[in-house]
Image 1 (cartoon, rainbow, N blue to C red):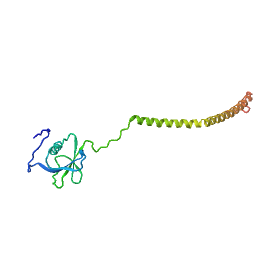
Image 2 (cartoon, one colour):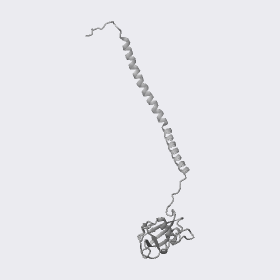
Image 3 (tube, one colour):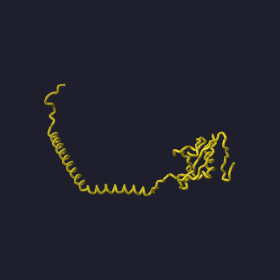
Image 4 (cartoon, rainbow, N blue to C red):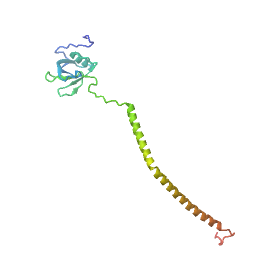
Length: 187
């Protein structure tokens, strides 16, 4: 049988084989109400898909399953799957059907504007570059002195090499060729 909302209402008699009856208490967390507002015995047919079971439970409590999320908890508070395998329970230990809004318990992170993050990173880079430039400006006089001292040392070393090479050149020019070896080689 289909009601005016387009949902199926299945009428099960008390002794129909293949049907489990579960006691379910309704808790409307989507309305920010922590109280249990209704307690009903809901027949659940064995071997049907979970969507049919979900629709059946929704129709018994008059809920629209398109805009809410259904959660069933056992008497210990553990979530149990909504399918045709829901075990039978008693009126004294009912399952609790929590009706929540979609994404009700998800706390969104605050959005970070991308331009502020880029601005922040660019500012830190700019400050680090400015600090490096300031350090270099402080060290410029010392760098000039070190560079001048190093140039003076290199010039002194080059002068020493030139003096040495000059002496060798003069020694080489002073020797003359007499035409024959003084001692004959032992070939």
